[in-house]
Amino acid sequence: AYMQQEVNTGFGFTALEVVLAGRYPYLRWWQNETENDRQIARRYMTFTGTLPLADKPVTQVSGGERQRILLAKVLTQETPLLFLDEPTASLDLVYQEEIFRYCQAVCRQGKSVLIVAHDIKLAAKFCSRLILLAKGQVVADGPPDKVITAENLEQAYGLHAAVFLNKITGNLDIHTY
View 1: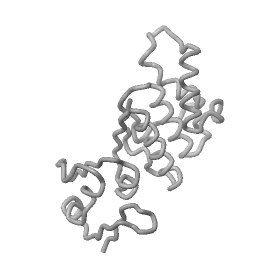
View 2 (view 1 turned 135 degrees about the horizontal axis):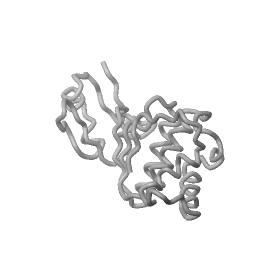
View 3 (view 1 turned 90 degrees about the vertical axis):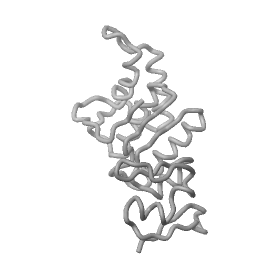
View 4 (view 1 turned 135 degrees about the vertical axis):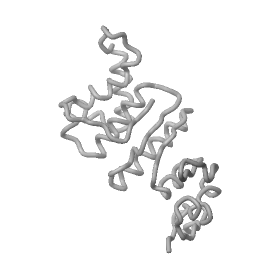
């Protein structure tokens, strides 16, 4: 399943209608969603905390709510692999972390999630494996502590940085200079 970076939600579709669109691959052109499709959609809306928004037009929800609705839509496809393109772009920190936490929970359920992200610290905090790319080439691939190094950041971005384990959070941290 694929969640694109920018989704035009200019129409007055409700959150539930948007999430149900994730079931389209399972329907014939003449079919409507079944009660089973609605149950699946409601289950993932509950998971992402968006069920209370089911009847609300997506044009009237916040950016964080919209991203959670779109994540529920992707989950409703019930595929073993999810591909998310910048799902946290333009979101407040609380919503950014929330999206990554949902993805971690999905991975614990046995699915794979591939996320394109530019926030290195957030990716290092929540992801079990990172692939650092620069100019179309793989700079490093592996666990965060092996990928996020001063040498790799300099090679990928020309960035002068110190990478260290933050004693307060226990997470990798980066200081640029």
